[in-house]
Image (cartoon, rainbow, N blue to C red; front, side, top):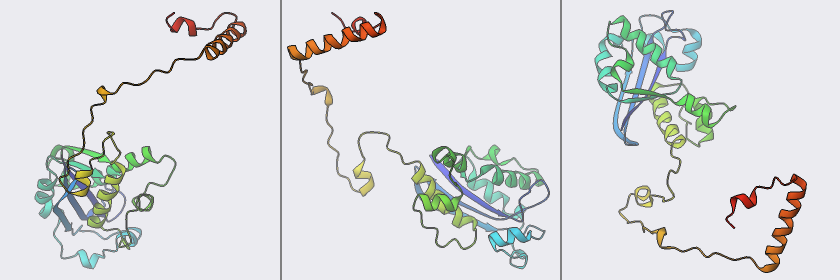
Length: 235
């Protein structure tokens, strides 16, 4: 399974009102292992960032002035996400901005190119209802080191998201722990056929049978003959 962890930084909060993408970061994972492939691009948005957005990402208009437009990197982005399952924190936000950029270029939208999308924010809210589920909060809760996150950065945040996602989704699904895979070795696990075990059946003593019969009689009296135990156990 091929997944792409994706994050964007933008000039503001509203793609509908003309805010644009200024940075995109993507990290590829195949079968829950990082492949080493990444895509990281800064983008000249053709408009200034809102002061509040600038405080978040720290990317000045001067820094972005000589960077390519989104149209110049659109092929790279589309090729990188093609057919992949996208994992995005608050996916509606990033997908909305990507779709707005693709719409301007009259290109297919994000999910027409990618295979599917998982919103890790929705997943986090299901796992930790009533708690803060920002990426920073999840890093603290799941013990992911985000000490390098002075500003939001698309590639850095995509990497943090990949680690957070792995920790949120690594629940044990079988009674056998795959120690060989965790250790990176080739040790074989012992396979045990439980069908060969015979469990002992301990019969009650006469005193225990008498006490049980007395209890059932009390239940009969209290329920006015509605006790169902005897109907469930063969005589």
